[in-house]
Image (cartoon, rainbow, N blue to C red; front, top):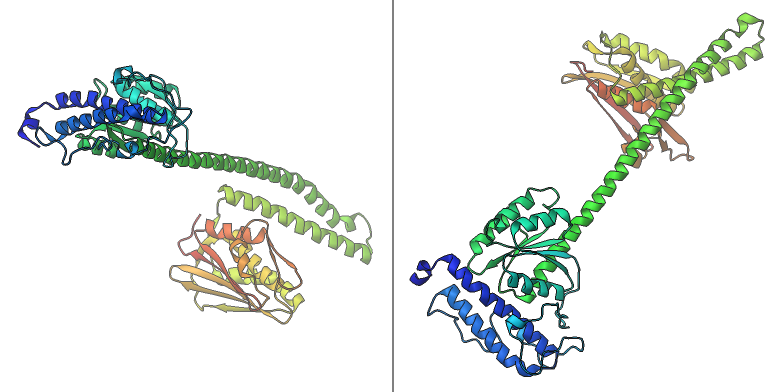
Length: 500
C-alpha cells in the first residue's frame, strides 16, 4: 500500500469505487445486448469504456502510478474477460435491440431485465427468490438484472432494517448482502439473521469491494456462505449463487425428511400406546372370567360324583386355563416392567435353597422328556439380595425352555458361580440350537424363532422378554450363545449389591 493510500480515507475510496462498479456493470450488459442484437459495431467503443473503467478501478485499489500490471486490451477487461470474448456472430433473436443511432449510456440503461445470452457455459436454471440488500440504488439495479437474467426472482432492500423486516415477512431462498451500509451495516444484519431460528438457515452471500477481504473473512466466520466482489463477475455470480442455493435445497430436503420421520415416529408411538392400552384392557377383562372358570372346574367333584373320564377332561381344562392365566399374568408383568411401574421386593436369598426350588419345578418336565438335569454349583455361594419371585420365574423359564427344546436322552446343565461382584447363572442344553440370524431378536416381545428341523416354531413368546426385563431391573445382564446342532447357552448375572 502506498503513502497516498494511507492518507486517503477508506470511505472516499469506497465512494470512488461505487460509480465505477456501476459503469462497468452497465457497460457489460450493453456489450451483451449489442452482440445479441447484431449491433457489434458498438462493441469496440463499449469495450474501451470497460477497459478505462477497469484501469481507474485498479488505480484506486493499487494506488496512483500502479494501475494494472499489463495493458488491458479492449476485448479483454480484467473484470469480465470470459464474457467479452464472445464473437459478434453469437446472437439471439429474442435479445432486446439497441438503438441504431447510438449506444445507451449507463444512465439510460434499460430498467427491465434482459434475456440472458445463450452460451454453452450457462448453468441450469435453478430458480428461487433472492433478496438483494444494498444502500445504492444503481448497485441493486445492476445485480438484480444480472440475477433476473439467470432466471431468479429478485426483491430489493435499500437498508438493513428493511431487509430484516422483509425476511421475517416472506420466505427467501438467499440474501445478497452489502457489507458497507449506513446505520444497520451488513455485519449486524448477518448477526441478527444467524440469531433468528427462522432465518439462520437462509444462505447469505456478502457483497464487498476488492479491498475488503478482511471484512469478508469476518463475515464468513459469522456464518456467511460466500462472497462476491464488486464489480460483479457474471460467471462467479452464477456459480456462487447456484452452488449456495443447491446447498440450501439439499438442507431443505434433509429437513423435510427429518420432519417426515418425526411425524412417522410420533404416529408409531401413538399406535404403540393404542396397542398397549388395548392389550391392558383385554388382559384385565380376561383375567376375572378365566379365574372363575378355573375355580368352577376345580369344585365340580364337590357338587356331584365325577367319573374318571370326566375328571380327566376337567384336569385338561384346568391345566389349559392355568396356562392361559399364566400368559395373562406374564403380559401384565412385562407391561409393568417396561413402564418401570413394577418395584422389586428385595430379600436376602440363600442361593442353594433358591436353586433347589427352581429345579424342583422343572424336574417333572425333564423326567417326562427323558432329559438329564445336571447342576454345577460352587461349594460356597454368597447370599444374594434379589426379588425371589421374579428371579425364580426367570430361572424356571430358562430351565423350562432348555428342557422343552432338548431331545430325549439329551441333557440340561445349570451352572451357578460367583464372578467378580456378581452371581452368574448359566443354563446349557444339548438341543438343536438357534440360527445365528435370530439371536439378536430372541428377547423381543412376541418374537418367534423358526427351527431348522421341520420348520417348527420355537416361540420365545413373553417368557424370554420377562427374563430380560427382570434381570435388567435387578441391574444385571442377560445373553445367549448358540451353535445350530450343538445346543444353546443362556446366561445372566445379578450384582451382589442388588438392584431395583
